[in-house]
Image 1 (cartoon, rainbow, N blue to C red):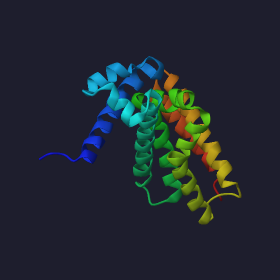
Image 2: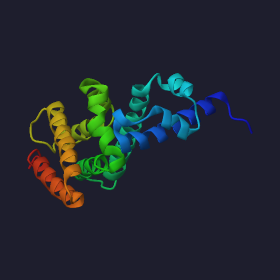
Image 3: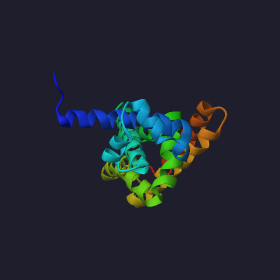
Image 4: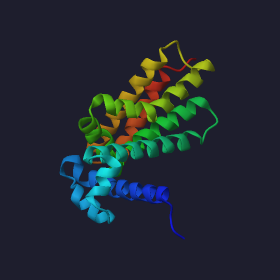
Length: 196
């Protein structure tokens, strides 16, 4: 059965972003070769330019894919509890854990801000992980679970702390132990905002 043009387009985009993700993760944005990516994907440079405009456009699509996957992991992990506060803790841990995974770390935390610029990167972050964090904090606040605090300020504070924690964990020789330490510290910080 012949695929429609829309199905072919989606398959081409998916194939190229999957291959590009491996290259961007392994080599970094600057060293990743678009020629190698299109060859490995079995496509032409024209396909890359047609669907993404340029290398930066392809990177943008890969970063969006990584952020969407991490947001999905956060939601899945948080859903393991019925308790709103525990959902927050589980979601925060899931974000940090996913962000330090080698396929994600370089794309999300190192090249993302430098390639796209801080404002574009933050906008993308706000559409995914920060959005989930903000929504969860609002729910907790509506139930009287937070001390009086600005939800937007707390969202940005926690998001920044988690991004920095992920960068720190990524540099540690024993990342699993560092993740445990960071999660314990994050829980203490979160507990400081919890209504008694």
